[in-house]
Image 1 (cartoon, one colour):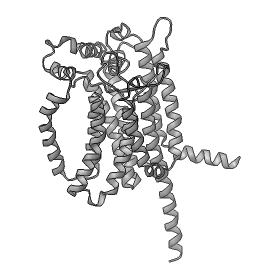
Image 2 (spheres, rainbow, N blue to C red):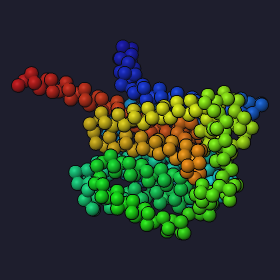
Image 3 (cartoon, rainbow, N blue to C red):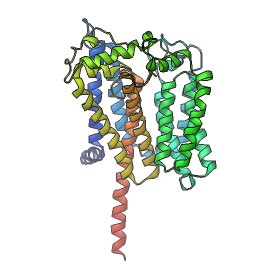
Image 4 (cartoon, one colour):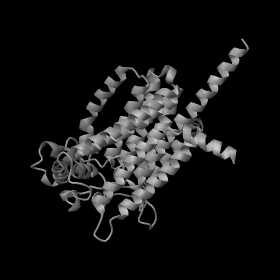
Length: 391
């Protein structure tokens, strides 16, 4: 009994309670906003809110379980993780398995889970798999990372998930993968000349993407930002979302009281446009506090990597931080009409089982990095002290 109590105390002590607390708080806020956006007169707690609550609860449990597993064991499984991620993406191309939203029958972004009415978005878990495999790849070649051969191999590695999600029609996730790829290379101290070459290559690829890869609706969403009057139908969602945010003023209309939110005037305001709910019902203050919590989560993750003194752990932490920061920037950019709608959820806040479950898997990985790096540092410290007694 004493051993169990001791192990429990050690588990609690070594868990990054601040990071976990921040994540749980913002998830609870997300469930509240999804409930506000989707409740009915018959039920205050909608199906979307229930699915999100279950996903968050399961995610927290998984994060704590993953935190117990030594991250060194996890990263050693990189070939298996990489293979599983590719298989997940290939499943999207199987008829009646890979499906998309009713409004976008041309895309295949979800795996239909039988006749349950539930769907899983594989790109969410593939983001984490990519961060792990790419982190291992970077660490393997770290001593000679700026050689042309290694840069080319890293670029091929990064191109695999980008191309796979682009083929499914998910340009938003492709953008997030690209940002993660760049951020992890930057954290690995890749020479600036390669970023300059990459920027030129991207600029040169834009005409090819525009003419041969992007669909008409994707083009229209970009053009609409520059000529909203001509593309009124395309801009409707963003216009309504921005009006809802403006309607909130400084302190908002209060929970379950937003005019646009309660009338369902903002399409997908429980998912892509959930920030409009925050803006309308909690005002500018609520928006700023939300951004502060996101900033604290990202800073905490980067801090774990910096303190780890392990290059793989540091690179992985940078990847997870980049993933969260990129999704926040892109999603909010959509809501305030700075960026086109690309179907990116707001971490911890948007409805959806896949995104909420997978974000906690990523947090579990960070908790594991923190816990087992801490254990190693304690052991090394004691070893040094013992060795000194024999000198």
